[in-house]
Image 1: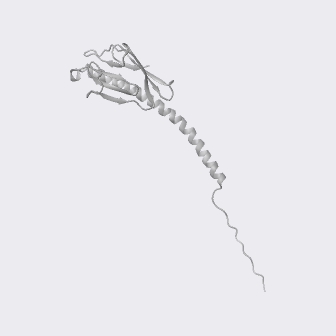
Image 2: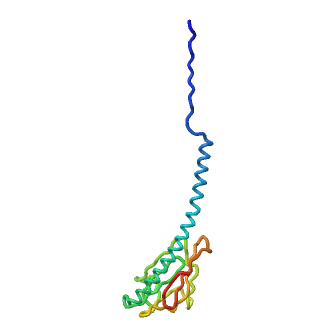
Image 3: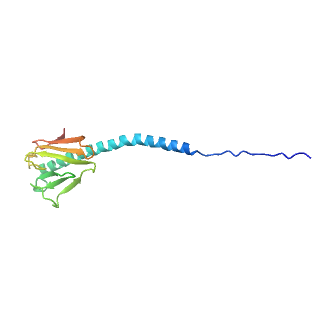
Length: 162
């Protein structure tokens, strides 16, 4: 009688080891960190730029409405720490029906309002569009007070960025 042949099969293990999985997760985390940090800084800069553009737009709108004697009135802009308000009339009245509030992005705030007369409102004169409230308004990042944009308001009522 002939001996029986024993046939053996090797099972090949498939898949990843725990060490390989940990290394891949670490690499993904490192790449994500390298990408996300600069994007967060870009978001803050865009918020600051957008806030300044909104402020310039609102000042321009108030001046144009005043020059056009819209509603037989003059218009102005009030600056608060977290918002700007376009208002109708010779003085700001909180809660007035004609007020239009524009909230600043939650990343920025109006840190300094330095206007002639010490107020926080710019009111434009009918027929000329001029203002007595010349000065500057500074918008800054809440997280980093060193990054800021300053808006200048001149005697002619025209506003621009410094």
